[in-house]
Length: 243
Image (cartoon, rainbow, N blue to C red; front, top):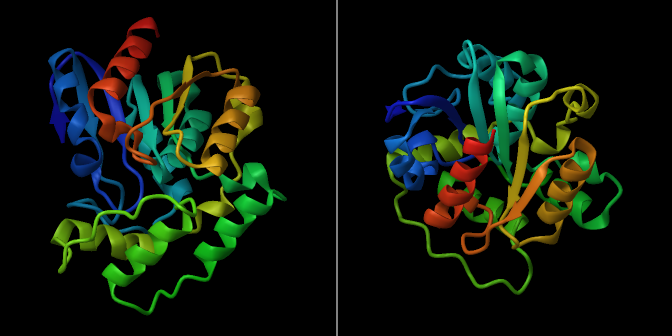
């Protein structure tokens, strides 16, 4: 799906929500940019994964779709794929933005990060998608945080499709971010987070330190930083223009 015209910006969604749902608040940026809104394998009308949803398979798809060059923006699970893709084809990346990649291996040995990995590994996948999604969200919710809004029942078909794909996905905790390859790249980089969870803040801080990136904390929408709309869009557009 393409919104707008101008320099290409490839947008890669994360788990559960497909591309148009994830990036709906970014559509106004199409006034000045061509937004290529991807659906990862297993989402929308995209083909199914070869085996299961996998950030390395996503990375190969993304690397091909960059074409002759584009800005690359990834969210959550899609941010992991974007990091891998940028290492595969750095010559095609004009700039890279990642929102809260769940790259828990960067914090291996940290009790809080390891607890999330263990909790996600223990999730029951023999339940209905709605029950799985409720449990999945709890694994990355800070204790004492306000309760999330109730999920619709039944889940809308696009959301149910995303949950089923997530249920069978390769665990995000297996991702080993190719830091060495990314350190050798010269394109501008930005790491954003929502200021809602110490583990995600720590992951983003590690990426910022290791890759010498710009760093932004945009509060108001938790893990889904892009849902803040104007605050995120203004920061993203300023970064893209500078890049």
